[in-house]
Structure formats: structure tokens, C-alpha cells
Length: 323
Image 1: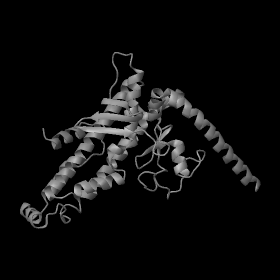
Image 2: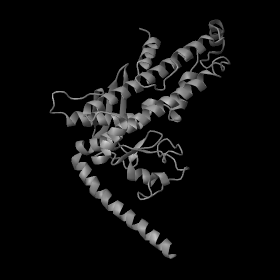
Image 3: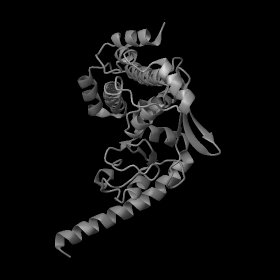
Image 4: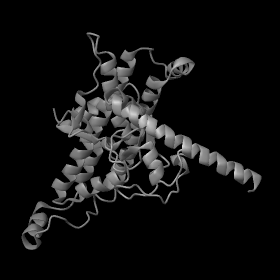
């Protein structure tokens, strides 16, 4: 079965209408392209170039349409994943209230099924985007499709870069370890593990269609395993206290108080702190897997947090008294 038909059947089989890539529509746009094979071949032979001029037929509709669809897909995935993990981590009355509001069954089975659906949704859309951009480059004998994908990544439109996918991976491992004694252990991913290479932690997951994700869990600021991890909107993961330091804010004020001009220490993108995602599931996983390190780091951070809190309230008191 061709991927286009497979993708259409998948999207039509969704119980709820969800955003997707207009794969069939985008293929029709490419078919209307007026750049002939002969002209492409002539350009290759005489200029030796891979990059062709902009296509007036495709570029005015193809890339804007695809960018809008990618944005909708990522937004849908992030929101559904956020609600799922919020439900998993909730407790007491809050948990029952969320169960009722979400109209889900109060069991791990419902959580795992929703997690599976989200993973499949992310993967099949990621494959669709890769295939249609590859098709664009093949039709135009160019690398503009690859360039567009790089641009989309810098705009945080790449679904495989979503911090919520990282959280789902940690969620899967946490559930698997919680139900290790059960005969029926839930599974979202095949081959998803927390591994250590030369003492450095990685979250590794092999997905279908030869897609493999490797998430480095070493903080680029303190050069240690991320503690109280947080993902900036650019996708880079840091310790919360390290991210606050890089953003020139205190842990009391938090990352939302960061100046929009502050940049990520790695990629140097601005406006990455306000929308940071707190990776609670990943924190639980690392706490279970690195108990000794976690306890030592907890003691160190407690001292620093108390110091910053004390300085914060002293400055607030001085400001209130006009000192």
C-alpha cells in the first residue's frame, strides 16, 4: 500500500478530527509544477548546481500550506500530550476532577492507549512531512525541501523535537517499571530505554520506519545529569537552576520573568525561556535511576534555593520600606 493511501486511512480512522498534513493536496501541487525534466537536466550539465530557482507554481502555495499544517499538528500533539501527562501526575481530588473533565476511564489502560495514539500520530505525521519534502526535492532537483525542514526546526515546527515527545518516552519507561511485576506490562514504544554512555545519560528510542531518537540528558551548563529538568522552546534541556542562571533570573522569579532578549546557551536563539516546559516525568525517571546522585544534588540545590529565596525576600522588604 502506498504511503499516501495509508496516511489517508489513518487520518480518516481517527475518532476525533485532528490536524494533519494535506499529503494528497501537496502532491497535486507538485504535479502542476512546470519545471520540466529536460530543463533541470540542462541546468545540471551546464552549471553543476543542485539548487534551482524558485518554482512559481509550487512555492507560493506548497511551503506556506505545509508550514501551517505542521504548526497545527505540533500544537495538537503538544496539547494532548500535556493533558495526558497532567492526568498521570495528578493526585487526590485533582486527579478525579481531571478524569471526569477528560471523560476517560480511571485506569492505566486508558493512559497507555492515549499515549500509543499520540506516538502514532506524531510518527506518521513526521514521516509524511519527510516524504513530501523529499518528493519536492526530487521534482525540482533541488535541496529547498531540506532547507525548509531546517527552517521549520528553527521555528520549533518539527514534531520530533517536541519536549512532550521526550516526556512521553519517560512516561513509558516509568509505567513499565511501575508494572514490572505484572504479566502485562504496558508499552508505548519498542526499544525505549534510559542508557548510560561513559557515565552520561541518554534517552534512546527506536521508532518505526527507521526513526531513532537519542536525547542527551547532560546539562550543557553544569556538565552533569540534568536535575529538575526543563526544556526551552528551542528543544535544549537544562537543569532548572542552570536555566535560571543563564536567563539571569532567580529561581523565585522563574523562567517566565526572563528578558525576551536572553538567549539559549547552546543555539543562541532568543525568546526561548517564557514557554519552557518542565519535564516532570523525566525528573521522576532520573530520580529512580540515579538515586545517589539525585540525593547529593538535592542537598546542594536546597542550600542554593534557600540562599536565593532569602536574598529575594530581603530585597522585597528593602523595596517596601524604601531602604
